[in-house]
Length: 86
Image (cartoon, rainbow, N blue to C red; front, side, top):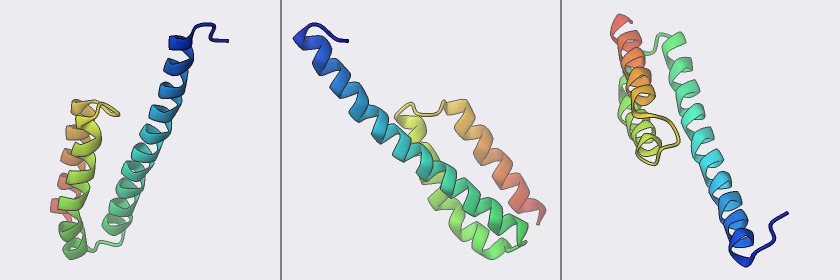
């Protein structure tokens, strides 16, 4: 257990940040799942219209450090390839 005032405050801050990061990461995962559903349905028009929103979501969390930049760009690249293959 934290035994100094600053350690107690740090613990509180970390728990708040963890909640925010989990929310952001789940939004990212849900966006990826939605895109994968559109690709599986072979709905190219909707997938292309959803791509900018997915791109924005991925870049937001990569900017904040929840996922790494390489991970974000790899995900976008793979999704784009799948859409172009439709």
